[in-house]
Length: 404
Ligand SMILES: Cc1cc2nc3c(=O)[nH]c(=O)nc-3n(C[C@H](O)[C@H](O)[C@H](O)COP(=O)(O)O)c2cc1C
Image 1 (tube, rainbow, N blue to C red):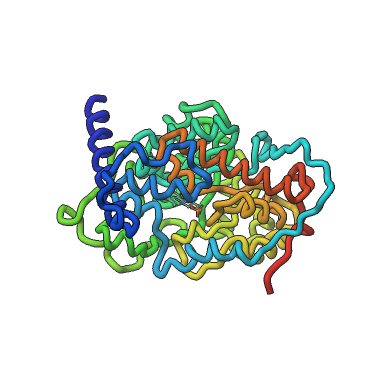
Image 2 (image 1 turned 120 degrees about the vertical axis):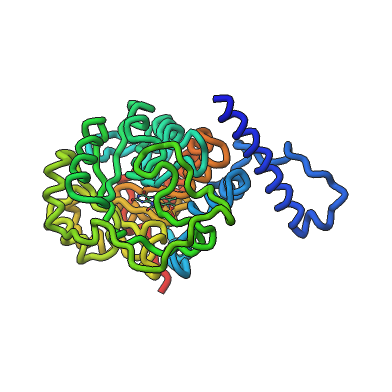
């Protein structure tokens, strides 16, 4: 405990030093060198105007390696950038004189009522951002009355996260080792009360995230990968590093799996199973055919196949192929209420948020995650109110127009 406090003090000091160095390097600071650096001038939680503003604070407070692990995409990071750019090609057609006095963003997902169609995407190693890791994130999601999807590679074991709150939580599956281990882990998660299994299928091979290669981070599984909750692998420094990631094919179990495995996973889980990582109409049709209970349209936040499309671009074809037969969730690059509104108008039931929740966690701990969710919820409510859409049921594709 004392050690924790001590290391928190140290890391805070280090973060402040980094922030001071950052300020000193800025042209503004250069022109005002006589001003002493004042840590009290760091912006506070209440000053955050949007989720983007959480990122530099998170960055200042965690190690470069941990920041890079969260921020990185793959190869040229084109998909990472394009996830954002694609939203700019879609505009909104607001309607006027609709009574929007009472806004209601709530919805029901697989039997669970949530206050907003905004969930936390499964992300490995929340301790990269903060020692409280998934415990804080789970509590923040519960406070916002929404769902955290806990990663297969959480920093804290799935048991500890299950205990953190009684609010409904989902669990994400990577089929990595063998089928027996996969079945055992699914059944453990379901026995702990996780209500939905999200099977991530977009990473049959570990990808080359070049920022990690440069940081000498050899693994794609961060602190306590698999739920040990203690180690903090990406904190390794240059000099004391493992050899860089070998540039070779690095397959995991899912590279030997196909759609026929979905029925087995559903049988083992005995709760709804969503397939995460769908990017085409063809695969959406196969998901329906093979009995998926839902899909998550995702390019993994630009972390697997570079030049995979932005998810918002392919959502219309996927919604059409799914034909309303299963709920569609989506993630990758969502940072604004209007981004979320666009996806809802294209037929998504809900949106999952990735990095911004870790920025909130890194910047302020649990209150920062709550802040990220609250900012997005408020922006979505405002965008809906200004478009004449008092509830999610009022939202449809007539709200959208596209750049040609
Ligand atoms: C640090 C980090 C770790 C991630 N770990 C996982 C994971 O363990 N399982 C998974 O299915 N997706 C993982 N993802 C992908 C997210 O679920 C999600 O698809 C992506 O972050 C959404 O994009 P966004 O960060 O731009 O919002 C991870 C993403 C990040 C940034």
